[in-house]
Image 1: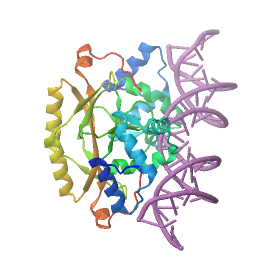
Image 2: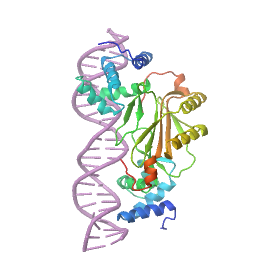
Image 3: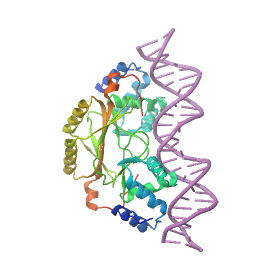
Image 4: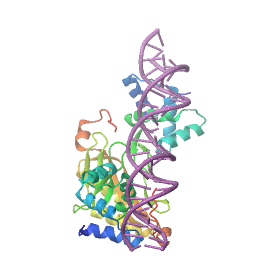
Length: 155
Length: 155
DNA sequence: CTCAATGCAAACCATTTGCATGCAT
DNA sequence: ATGCATGCAAATGGTTTGCATTGAG
């Protein structure tokens, strides 16, 4: 099996190396699958995807490697429905954050270079090494704000 | 015990009435406790708070009433660390955000007026009515960064 | 060769649900 | 009276962990 050539793959490998962790076949496969995944997914969907691809990697291994994927910036936490933790691939599209409509559940993506920079500056101030972040704005989207407060649908 | 005089309390009562639900002592107490809670909390913290207040309301009842609190706008979903669902009192003032150390779990608070303003501006751009937000930075705090990264401690 | 990674199964634990009883309406 | 609400206990289900085995370095 070929070495991953994507820049993300390199970063993943570097992280493992730097931490003295092993660059196993499973990790390569999980990483590769992430790059094939849709934009949003949860741990179980990733696991199912691997299974469908004919690989036999246990769900546990997927779970155990998610922190590493987060740390190397391959994925970021995302907004999910229900109890599951949702993730999001950080592809060519790059990093972005979310506005979540509390009424209809709709998610709008946004990105602000300025905010990213301020964030980074704050971390430097505190001697904090920033690995990834989670920035969500909750409120009402244009449509729902117009339609004005009916029942607040949960879930 | 006096009737709740807060506007939120009225709204809560109205909602129950409108739905043909009962305005029980427990519901009154839960609601009152929410108004005394800090800005962010989870179901269990709310339950513990009630217990500390000398009331004997079961955890289940707290859980069962959270949807109603959401619906009447007393609280909104927030995001917290770990597996628990976090909530946030609406109308709470003085929002601050957090840096979470992935190694030691330590939480550092920060606040940036500039970021808040940029956030607000982005929302206006999208016609999004911002109610509250969640902004967390994950990484390694000064102490842990110095001690250098070995184990990927989760949690 | 050594220690970390994996798979399996069992454990966890926040949240949910079924059921009998208890109250608000 | 009527039927939703509560408390208890047991169930759920996503995630985590212990342990024996495998495999990367």
